[in-house]
Length: 289
Image (cartoon, rainbow, N blue to C red; front, side):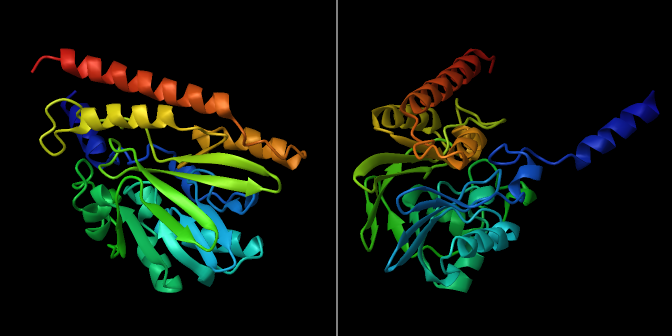
């Protein structure tokens, strides 16, 4: 029996800690066909980690650098679509967890892109994750630091050519978690587009008496109010499973030009995540101290 206990303890010591985004490792570096969503917005991420390219004649905007090991996948996707990787002029992220921003230093080095990050996440990305409120002690969550060129505030506009993106602070998952919105023109049609940062409450997050992030619960509540207030014709997010990407991509391949138009799906997603947050908060509020 003592041997079994020692063996179990040893096994637990080598188990990896929960990853920031809670995605499956096997999906993170799995190639996915790049495709045009609508207008000048393209998907260039992996199966598990979403990246988006906004193209203009003056250069391009990339949202999410993902893992450093995944940068070649992003580059290959951009080039397969017929665009030049080194014409990325602006780099944005959804939030400062390594599965979404660990590749930023490399992309900056390769392209010279200006890195723009919401204020609450700047210290984290510039420390390579070492100042994250929850994952600072997880070595798997650390990455190469990247210097931020522009610090964003809630409501700031990022412009390049005729592209205009609005940074909406949706903190909670990280202190600077950002949901990106834009009005996307596709021929004669305009789509209000929402790229959700992350509404997830990760395993181990302390929503009550969190010394490293005292206002975490209030930030989540504000985030859900913000998300509920947004008009979303096109519903996208930091992970493809947020918006049922596989299903919609299949429809797109069959000729459904509006496969990613999902107003009701967006409302259901936000309501479901808000309910999950409230349930976890209630649970923690009732837990013995």
